[in-house]
Length: 360
Image (tube, rainbow, N blue to C red; front, side, top):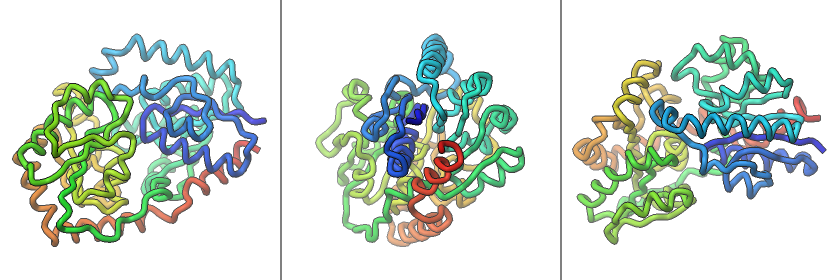
């Protein structure tokens, strides 16, 4: 019986990890999965040794503030990996943690796969040498990533984007639909930064109904917000929230790509503390932060970053996106995006390649 140790630290990694686990189990039901993940991976068979609810820290300030906890996490996971002695370690996104763990895995001779490549093409490209030093293989999910990692002689493969496996394009958008989706992010600091402005906007536009896609892990945080009747929460089901929406306000991250694959017009928002923003400005190489814009290499959807994320800008883009012409333009670009991201059954293809290269 082969043992696999998977490490995901965020909601998107939990989703991708679960899809990969299901596909691997279909190939070989005898596989055992251990590691760090969330409810979706647990429901797919993960023997969870630490839940992602206790993990996600974003930005320099948050990392420094939680440094003792982060260091103890490294000590814990090393003990767990040594105790389980897995046949393969699969790192899933979560680069701030996984990139630091990687050299220890190499030193201790653990076969290591990285699934969902660190976005080194966006910032801190100097880390490519470090990645090459410990990873045995890299599975990438964006079409331009093979060319980037090939520059650094990092073995990789691209089969498409696994989000397409479970997301179908919404065929028709009802122009009379008054439902707006609010996706403030999956991390506590993202929610604190984005949700108050989302709620202010909703209060100023009461002719619409708003659904906040929340995570049950943050119940206590959401309790601090008082909501009028036309704003409600739906937990742990962002896809269905988006499917019912005419338009979405979305915090930057993988949710922006999910929204695009569904065909829902969106405004991408991002705000952080001043220090994190100043640091990021100096490190990021690319002109966009929304994955749909990065992949298409142009502004398909508006991005409101830091000071531009305000009620006036939100209103202007909101009104523009609701016009039939702009809605149609954006959805046509979304369809081109779906073609670029390859065929369906991506998780199955990745699992098949991974199993035959690194497990049997």
